[in-house]
Length: 402
Image 1 (cartoon, rainbow, N blue to C red):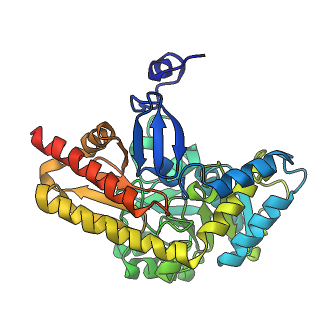
Image 2: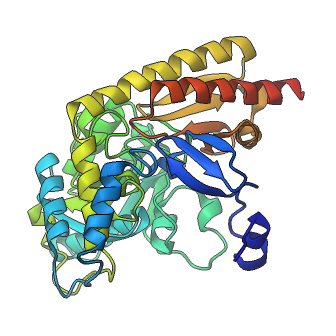
């Protein structure tokens, strides 16, 4: 059956507006479309393809497990899930893991756990959840309500209650909002969709201290920032602040759908048998690939290399900006970077993304004013240089079209 981009308009619900080309093959940080045109991938499947496309060790893990066992349901456990949980708890603050299929599902589990923990320990009045404006935590109705972007949650009827938002990096506003009725605070330790916003160290520390003061759980959504993307295995490690619950997905599977919620034994005990579940969560196929991805990423040379590659990105982006003067700043850390547009180009991030696609570079946006790069952690330096040469041509095309 011959399919094209036009087929999308015929058969798919129109909630997406994909690019005109259809990718068919990937290797490392390069992708080829139906016409054989080659692209450099700075998008990484939205921070998912942590080791690029079709990494040989991930392909081997997938095919080896694919010949053994794909799916059981959680009526049974399985070896890859147990090994992955053991490695995640060994590498982090956590003592217990729960597996799902996505970041939204991991966040849903975290929020349900926090509510159940508070109900069991303190009673039904302790139910407030605080999150942050411009935050993003998924597209289920609970997670999209907790996310701080009303455009994504409005228009679907009554929302889950007892959810409040304040501005990121505004400790005074947060302190005024939190109380003994707060059961949990959910935050990204580096805001992704909201514009690649780094937290101020004093803000993160203050949030942790106020959570302790009011017996509230601190949930770190590390769906986008986790698994080496910031140069630490998880971003919390570089902030010196430990959450009570951590969610991880995207890069965890290296391209295979998987999510995980990590927490302590004491907190995790409140998800008693039957309180939450997932048919596919923790399936052996996804866990086998995620285990291999974690093994590869969690090595000093890979994590240190992330920061070296960040420095190369920043050096070349600075040179581009000196020539064209389009960015106010380059934000982010490691292989999660955002080029924030200056006043002259406000609202035009998509124009730059489309121009980049026209130059055979795949990138992303984070809101209307930020061009986002989330490439493989092991993208070769020559691909960074060639990709940014293409990006410079895209910037020139937008600037010269004025």
